[in-house]
Length: 87
Image 1 (cartoon, rainbow, N blue to C red):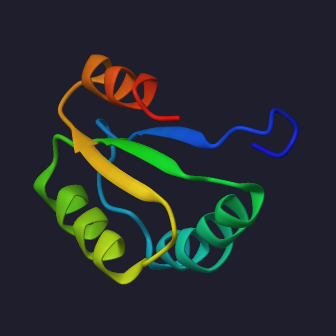
Image 2: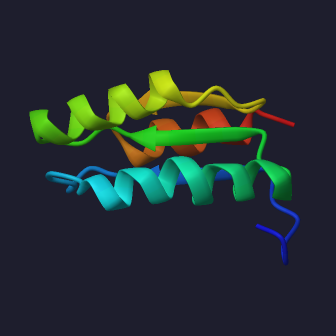
């Protein structure tokens, strides 16, 4: 994100299963703050197939309140289309 000065991101979590506590902590304490600092404005998330991963990501999403917009999608096509319409 820094090198390309990107303000958009897609997280393809379709095949995620359980996410360890350490990974959840890393996402919330390291990845998201650094992405926001780098200029993240829009993040599209491909919804996981597994209920346990959906639950974890939903909780993470509710805990993380950044200055970027997030939206969940069932397909990569929907995510790409949404991001393409963002400035």
